[in-house]
Length: 336
Length: 250
Image (cartoon, rainbow over all chains, first blue to last red; front, side, top):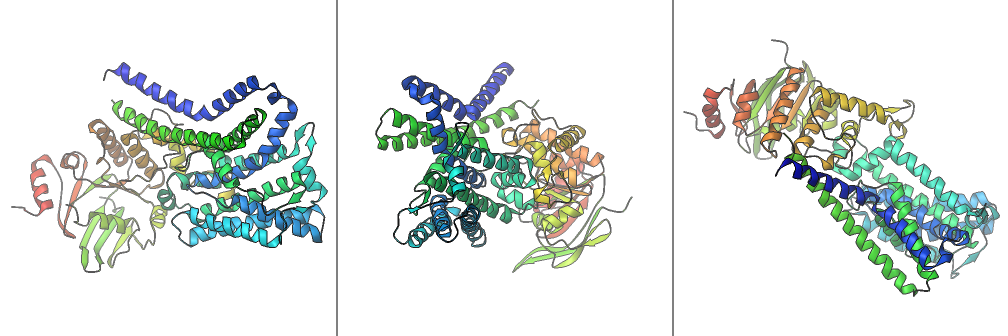
């Protein structure tokens, strides 16, 4: 191959890889542009604020899910974990209606479930976290229903929690600020801290991580603990917005959060992705749902649409790893 | 000659009924490339894994700069200054070369925090990694791209260069050119020469006699777990080396 061809082949591959890395954001922007043409109501401040509020829970829980997926794992329990947390919060509220004990109870419950996921997965030497988190998905939902003794909603939440989950500041939902805080904390951990580097290392090559002396078991467990903690924060926000707790909350939230992370551009193959991916994916799901609502499209079609987007996102992931292989080959060919 | 960096004395290792190493001794010196030769199953890998802390010897001893070692893990051997680059390279495809260099040994602050909670000094790591690569004359197209985008030879070079950051005593290379094309092999051989110049004791496992003749100062031949020869390789005795390896010497 003449040198010129090789160089242009290489730049075409790297251009394609760059496009793929900003692809989800581009698609989101195009989506917003297209929808605002179809329905002028879409870009009204009240609707944007609405989308942010509806996306908040998915975004918060997706940030935790994203860390788990970075290590090639999956957390199926987040939805029922969130529901159990709100029910426990609701029970505490009956005894003590101040905000702190209720919020702490929700966080503690959700974090504990996360720790159970991590410890059983790692020390039970399970082949894949799919199994244990599937088990806790079922256990938490059952426990939540049991504890709620037949109630589908338990009314009442401390005022402070209702403010966090349901009120606005300067027209921006408070829950949006919660998303921002969680995202910043996760970003700091993932990008600036040694622990975050280890999460990427374990996701990129678990065997090598062990060889390099990284505490792989601790790193794996920590991602499930954080994912549980995020489900707890999501529970506080959701209970605050609705002013109630329910054993039915968070139904299919595991799928929404996994979809958000993958649509946003993180990889199922491990070690690739950042907080932005989880956020972009969550907003994209929120935008699609909102737009189809505004356009009066059947709710069933929303599920189909999101399913199709997931297929596209996973294909993009596969395409990316193939392009990387191509880039490698081009590198080898260009050594003089 | 100076005291050897690494001494293996009368090493013996059994796996059940299989006698993998029988009374093997060797010395590796700083500023020298020692080739370890042998057919498949001759005991090369077992020997290397004993040196790098994967297996413990049944009998015999391993001395590092005169001190007896009893490594219980590869991490312990690594801490003592023995780095091994296996064929799988143990690289993190999703990380950049500099991130790979320091993975598990991150430069971070403040020191009073537990290691995992410290903040990364990314710029310091980038700078140091770049200077190591420059010193070893390794050229990479981009230092901020993940190693997934780099060729087999570049990846091999990164793995070897990483080993030199932490192993100032012994570097063991397991068939470093096995998966590489001609030009990329050349680069890696140059890199091994560079390691020798810098004063590391290099142990090189390879099947390529050309490379042995070109690069190795001494060669040790294993067959069926025994050391069957130790000689100074040159072109004239290349055939003799091959005969020793397969066990048909005249």
